[in-house]
Length: 497
Image 1 (spheres, rainbow, N blue to C red):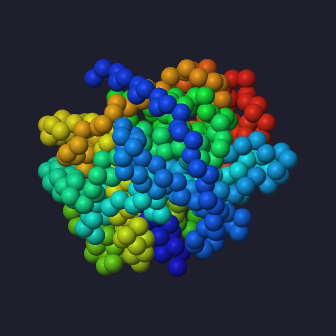
Image 2 (cartoon, rainbow, N blue to C red):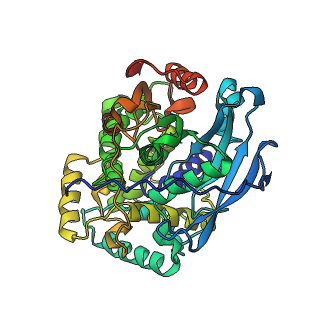
Image 3 (cartoon, helix red, strand yellow):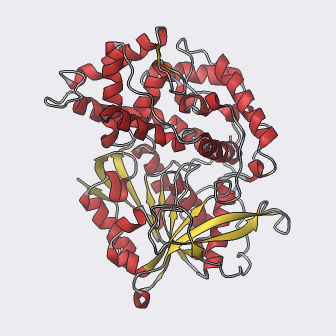
């Protein structure tokens, strides 16, 4: 059924469940060049639906880069070789979002959407970041109920209370401390960046091109900051604010702006005559209707057998709203749920991914977010911030300022976050949709300012998360493709109407 397919698509966005966020902190000193790595042993990849040309390998890297001679872990790498060896330029790394996503299958997937001129020149490289299968895995062994998106990215209670959220934070952080082993302490952006440089060395490349998306833009920016001599053509797509004082905390805060930027597009679509999922006769009616439905479900949730949680409450509707604004193609998910809630019914429960996959993904996301930057521990600070957020941004109801698992994280960050600067080669192209719920334009502009002369930015008049070859437009796609194929960028920042 249409509803079932749509809701299943929304559920699969759980990979972003944890986000997909003082004085200036110091930059971590760049590591010395990675030691010469043995050649990767390429074999046939496991799994179905992959391009027959895709190969896989495993690379051993230090678990702790402060003790590089100690325990090692495995990082899985994949590639499809350049299609025109005579024109080969190097390797293009596909950096996944998240944190908690993988790009291991991307050479066979989105990599095949790249123009032929790019695929001719570059080996397409994917990888499973440390902690994610089939790399050495990590798990917090959370309870099934705690794998719900609205728990991992918690919403305040209907009255604004965060007491239950703080108890959940203590329970989840305790589970990770008990079950995550030593590896959970070494899951971070800086660890991933150093792994990437080990991948580069193992590939035998002096320089690495990259296409980073969402959280991958932060990874790509940090790599470009710490290893500028090893960068080639860098595309950062759907960009995170690089504020080193906040990092992922700031990305969560950004949902307030992202929803305000994007919800009007949903409202116009949801009020369009002839739309089978039309919820109102005018766009102006959609926002108050949504708020009324959420408030009614706060008071009287509807049983939803088979779902996690097993009821349709106000926060589940709000979470569905957030997930559905990631792409216009997902707008029907929210509209269908609003229509069902107005009738007092529920659609078929979405089919979630296996718990084992969610456990793995959640642990990597938690580890990265909590290890990258210190989070406040004051209950009063969270309560005040949530109250202000609920008053100013009722659509997001305080969630972006709420206490999540990191509020009770037992481990202080091992290193300070990296401050992004304009020091380094001018080889970065940013592409950004004007309306993006997860990485709003306001944050992308901060990354653009931080990079200075190193970057040029293409702003696309489109709606959705992920711009290049996804929710952008032909003008933006042409500009990025030309850069990857030829190295030519616009002379300055451009706008693609």
